[in-house]
Length: 180
Image (cartoon, rainbow, N blue to C red; front, side, top):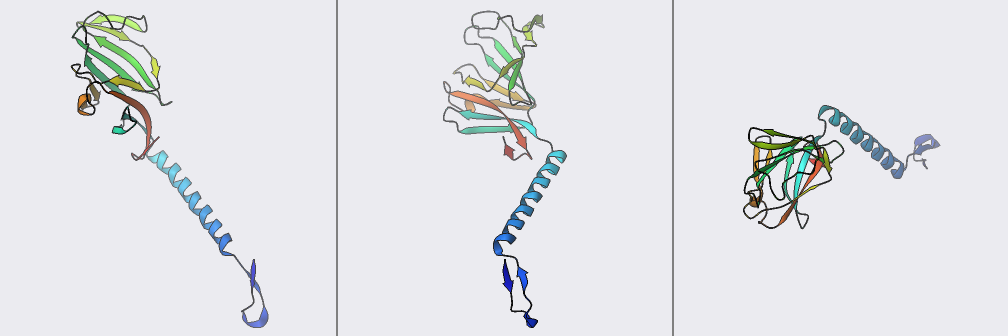
C-alpha cells in the first residue's frame, strides 16, 4: 500500500491500491451473481427442453418446457402408423416409455421389452423404460415423421430434407434462456 503524505500536518494514511479495489469489486460482483442465480433457480426452477440438430450439429429447433413427447410415422413396410412415446429424465436422458402400432410385421417391435397388450385396434408395448442419450431419426421420404409436444405438432421434413438424419437431445433450460 502507498502512503498519502499530501495531507496537512504531515500525517500519512494508507491508500488502497487500484488492484486491491478491483479485486474487491470483482468478488462483490461474483457474490451478487451467485446469489441472484440461486434465487432465480428457486423462483423459476429449470425445465427440460428438446434440441433438434442436423448431421452438421446445427441447431434447427429448440422446444422448452418438455416433459413428454411423441413421435409418429408410417412404417415403411407395413404402411401403418407407429407411435413412440418418450419422457425426458432429470439426468438428461430420454426414456422411451411406450410404443403403439397398428399391424404386426417386419421391423415392428416384438423384443419382449415392457408389457404387451391389445387396445382399441392397436398393439401396445408399455413400461419399456429404455434410456436413450439422444434420439436419432432419419427423416423418411414417405413416412410423415411428426413430433408432438403438448399441443405443438412439428413435421420433420419441414426441418430437414427426407433421407437426412436428425438428432433429438434432451436439455435442461434455465430461465428460458440458458440451454445446458
